[in-house]
Length: 381
Image (cartoon, rainbow, N blue to C red; front, side):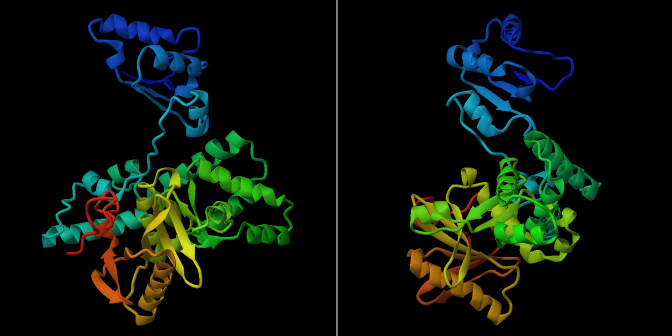
C-alpha cells in the first residue's frame, strides 16, 4: 500500500489516520495486515503521524517504509520520533552502474564497441552527474534543473528549516566549499576572509552552517584518520565533497574543466554509498597525503589515491609516495590508484599498487577487498 500524504485530496491527522488501516482491511479482507508492506511518502504532512506509526508498528505490521522532505523532516528526526523502532537507509544519486542501466549501456567492456560506449558514458556521467530525472531526460535543461535543485535545498531544506538570517555568509560558504572540493578546508580561514570583507559574524555560525549543509545531504565531509580514536573524532581538518557532480559543473563553471576535482568527487560518492553515514571512510595525511582510507573493524584495509592522469613521472611518483608512506604507517597493503584511463600494476618497495580506470571500477556497485573480508579483489584485466 502506497500513500503520498502530499496529495491535496488527503487531509489526515491524529483523528482519522486509522481510516487507512480500516479501508485497507475492507478492500482486502483475506490479506493478513501483518503481511502488508506500507509505503508512506511525505509522512510529515499528517499531524500526529508519530503515534499512529508507533501503534501500527507495535501491534499491526512491521513492514513500514517512511520518507519525507528534508525541509520538514530529517531521517534523524524520524528515528527520534519513533524511539528506536527504525532502520535508516540512505539513498544517493545514481552510481555509474545504475547510470548505465538507465542509459541501456551494456557493461560487458570486453567488447570494443561496448567499451567505447561505456567510456563515453562515463565522460558524460562525470560532468553531468547522476540525478535520475536528468539522466532520464537526456540532461535537457541541465543547468536550469540543477540550479532549481540548488535553490530548493538551500532555501526550503536549509534557510526556512533552520531560520537562517545571514544568507550572504551562507552563499559565500557554499562558493568556497565548491572551490575547495577534495581539499582540507579551514573554516577558520573562511571566517577571516569574511571578516576582512567587512561582514560581521560569529565563527561558530560557519561551523553550524557546515553541519546543516551536511545534514540535508548537500555536502558530505571526510575526516582525517589517525590510529588514535580520540584524534580522529576531534580532528578539525576535514575534506568536503558534494552530493552530485552536477552541482560542481553547474554552480561553478570553472570546475567544468577541472577533471581532477570531478573525478575525486565522483569516486568519493561511489565509496560513500558503501559506507552508511560515512562510517569507515577517511583521508590520511602525514608528510604525504592519501585521498581515501577505508576502515573495517577499526583497521585500515585499503588506501586509495585518485588522479586523472599519471602519465608524467613526477605525478605518478607523488601518488606512489603517499601510498607507500601511509601503507608503512598503517600496515595496510591494499593500494590503489584510480585514474581516468590507465590500467596496470606497479611493484614498489615490495608492495603491489593496482592502477585502474574509474569507469571500470565503478561498474561494480562496491569496492572489493583482498583480505578475505569480502570475496573478490579489484578486477585487473
